[in-house]
Amino acid sequence: MRGSSHLAIGLITGVAVGGLVTGIPFSPAGIALAGFSALAPDLDHPESRLSQRLGFSRNYVRVAFVVAAGGLAAYTHFMLPQGPDRRMGFTAALSFGLIGIAMQGGSARRLALAFTGILTVLAGLYFEFLWLSLLGAFVALAPFTSHRTWTHTLWAAGLWTYIGYLANQTLGWHGVAQFAGAGYASHLVADSLTKAGVKWLMPFSETAFKIPLIRTGSTSGNLLEVGICTIYAALVLSLVVARMSF
Image 1 (spheres, rainbow, N blue to C red):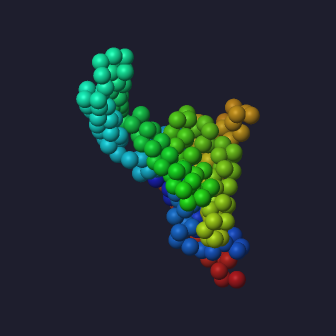
Image 2: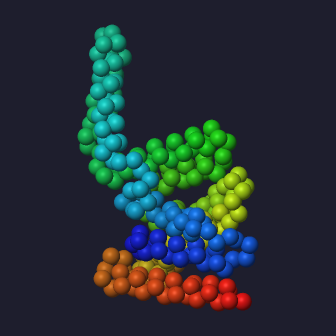
Image 3: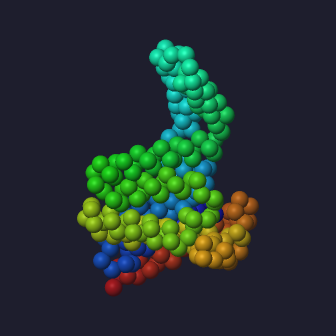
């Protein structure tokens, strides 16, 4: 499914959680969290909507490598004497420069997401927020997995829900785990409606669970996604209104 459809389904799921689950407050923040969580599984795809938002600009990453190469070359030239260390310094500088010049969009964004995740891990360690460090580790590692593999499993959904649970314990915001977990699961359910399906139980099973209704990117697939989002929104809205009327 397209990122826009996942976002819409996640937001609708957030409305369902806030409006239908007893004890969970209805809040715009919770709905937004469900929408964010619905995009999280596609962090394994460097061109996904969330990957583009979370990672620093890939051009900055490429420039950073080139600048690092220049700095290392200057340090080697002015500070290191003739010998093996000097040759090694220039070799490393050349390597950094070539990597920066040759780095294309996908690889640059993966590296940018890794930087973003590592910084988040460090922030979590500094503030002693385990949930923040786990979130950072997820963001850092997800781009280096194959698409629709590890992030599209029942275990990943459980981990994401657990991160929400820990955040709830730290922040005192009741409902974080429910909004986060439901949003994440909505992505897996939605992708199970595509022809490729989802390997929910990987690595214990390579079977892709699917109801092959949608061919992502096709005109018919796009229309089906709009139809599914519309029907889902109407169903949730009717249930929420009915619950409020009692």
